[in-house]
View 1 (cartoon, rainbow, N blue to C red):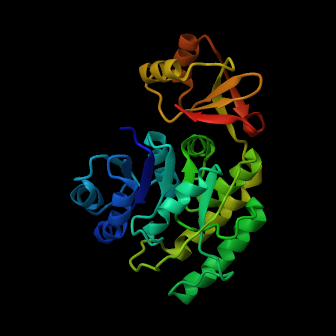
View 2 (cartoon, rainbow, N blue to C red):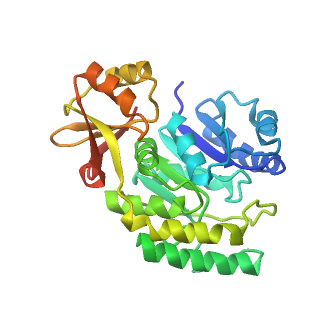
Length: 310
């Protein structure tokens, strides 16, 4: 039985909140089907027992994967790593505390039958209110900055729960460069540049205490990343193939080259196998094995294409 849904959970020093998060998620796992749902925990270089607790809490599931970063790279890097190993047709990225009520997850999957990206939206009343006045104010400021720099029409840019079609998730992960908390803004910026279809999903959430995010510490890093969005040159190595390139053969050759997390972007004239930026050497082997041409390409060449995960 094949995996239909992948739930990616980035976790940095979340040992104390994983159990409660699982208890919130468990009824939905049973609804989605534990035999067709995988849970991927990405330990982002935690200094506590996050990885061991994750094994204790989620280890009994038939489809679970635990990945550990060698150090703390940031939430964006952790989500991208989880996406690169995801196998489900649909991917849901969710915070370890499951603050967004997991009962909404089937709604994300429903939206992904129609759209490539389904971000959660908590802004039904126009403003997101946290328990902390400082956090509410910071959220308002951050949202204004994202709308200014990313120019997205999505109202809630900070929701920690987002759904993707797997092919879309792979492409966004391959293109993304921001490792920290501004990765959400970059995601919406790239989605706009790629002309992706978006359907927000209204969600309810609980302001779960115990977050390790230090607002003052990350604010200036976020502002720096946002200001660089329009100056960033997004370009990846690709292998140019024929329109009717065979996916099974591409998977076989890619496994032999030990390159993962790829996406095939089919167009009207050719197909582009998009590679990670650090996989140019493996790309040489893939290009030779598939009789393709290795080159680099930017966002413009990836618009309006059908995306197939490899």
